Amino acid sequence: MSALLKEPSLHMRPMGEADIAAVLAVERAAYPYPWTEGNFRDCLRAGYCCWVVELVGLTIGHGVLSVAVGEAHILNLCVHPDWQGNGLGRRILERLLRLAREHEADTAFLEVRASNLVAQRLYESAGFNEIGLRRGYYPGQGRREDAVVYARALI
View (cartoon, one colour):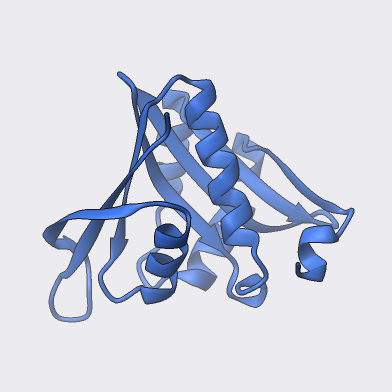
């Protein structure tokens, strides 16, 4: 187990409006096509499960989950590049799946860039199975990139 997972000052909590600037900084550091401020504000307004991860007061990751009609959708899971590879993505994923179960979802879905093999390994190791492909789902340099669709039973 990594030292990060044992770190007593690592804290996960619900996201609020005041967190958006710090969350956007993580998004921009991690992704060439990050979510916008409007995306996060819309998720908060809609009542989605939005979480931040802090280490000594510094926001280093976040996750967004929507749940409706027995289905959970992991919409965003992001770890600042400086903190990737320490098990933090797995911790965020586990929290989101626990929240999905608490909201009585029986299946969780997510999409991931076809080029993001690290994330695909994480999801597969957490019991997700590839169920499809969304062609041209993500913006890309000069052309759009496919999304691999994953699902996992929660019951």
